[in-house]
Length: 328
Image (cartoon, rainbow, N blue to C red):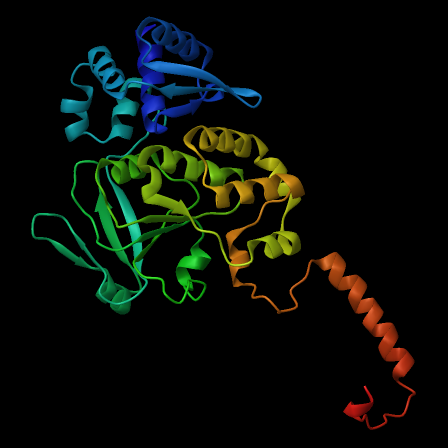
């Protein structure tokens, strides 16, 4: 029982304090439910068709895990990588917790004069490194003091990191590429202290993207916002994807439930309602498709191309006549 509980608590901590019940074994679920009833440090809630475990008392959970595995975090993990510890216990590097204590942020300056400071006199000139190397890397962990005085943009797709022409003309700060999911380490690092003047998340407009924002919003509140691309309603209508929406519907339902409980901003509620109303998701690369450019879904393009072809054929034998604009 103690091993199952320790494994469950580790998974819950690594997941950022919220974990789907389906991610646990039956033994781990039983141990965690008993722990929740006894201590009230963990809550179980229903989300859509599944259940979620959520940490209600972080320090109590951490303290109990330390009791179950004395010295686990203070001694062994300080000298042996976590995955090596997993191998020593279970002969599997990915069993139990597979977390790392450090995460490397890939950064790019939006404009000149972008610096990060660690509070100990160290300075990272992101603008210079972006100009010289194309990007900068910053190793972060929960106890450090790295921060910037400008906004931090979080984007999940590399295309937007490679080409920053999509940014608003007055944008400033640092771009950070996070590759799809905000890790628990990154979330808690952002929550530990103010890291930027504002944290701006620009994800895909789907269940996973909204769920990532909900996790971030729960931790740092109004310090963060979800960026809405210009004319997103039109882009959703033209380029929205039904399959992606359906694949991430459970994530969407969980995200909306969490955001509503926190007081969802009205502009974000409008986006959520539109996604659900149309049954479509919108990938962030659509920001490159400018208004007025004929970039239409294939089925619509085919029908219009056929129509234009027939018009061209009917006019091919006609003699072109000069047009007097005054007659129009």
